[in-house]
Image (cartoon, rainbow, N blue to C red; front, side):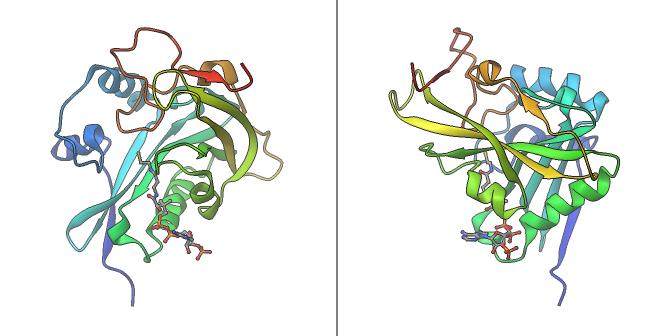
Length: 208
Ligand SMILES: CC(C)(COP(=O)(O)OP(=O)(O)OC[C@H]1O[C@@H](n2cnc3c(N)ncnc32)[C@H](O)[C@@H]1OP(=O)(O)O)[C@@H](O)C(=O)NCCC(=O)NCCS
């Protein structure tokens, strides 16, 4: 039997605006500057956010954008970057993660391929490399870094992950130095650069 789910593109849906800011996190809905700035730039250039509703409840989401306006310093031609994907644990077992990725691939038929990042050894449970691999992404490269302000001294790896689209597509590259800034597009992201930290980077390479 088909699961009773629905995927809605909420990019232009004011009635779902809270999910553009708080995503699926149990945090209060608050429009914060970094996110507003990001959305203002990215939406007109192809950013998309979609939610998955299962039995009347929002249990999944995917967010992606063309490489030029993605949340990560990834570069390439015709590439779509998956900023984030999330399926709540209580909705596991229905294949919703893969369904969301397939929905992105289907919606972005002209993409040469799809990139994202994956973490290994980071203290949070988020954006794990192995989970991105389960969704079909393969690691291309990695950097080993540590946070300058949290869990100081703990090294972890950030992988550049790739899901090919068109045959013979040119692989993405990334700005490893720029990655040290962390990310600005989402407060719930494990590499979020809080506004209160005025230094330009929150990470440093581990060999330092
Ligand atoms: C990664 C994620 C999206 C997968 O969603 P999901 O709906 O559970 O995944 P699916 O049901 O589509 O499963 C995809 C594959 O992963 C496998 N899988 C999923 N969870 C697994 C687990 N805990 N252990 C082993 N395999 C697992 C499934 O068996 C499936 O493999 P198959 O295609 O070979 O059968 C989900 O686990 C998640 O949201 N994780 C957190 C992601 C995150 O950090 N987001 C950032 C929030 S800030």
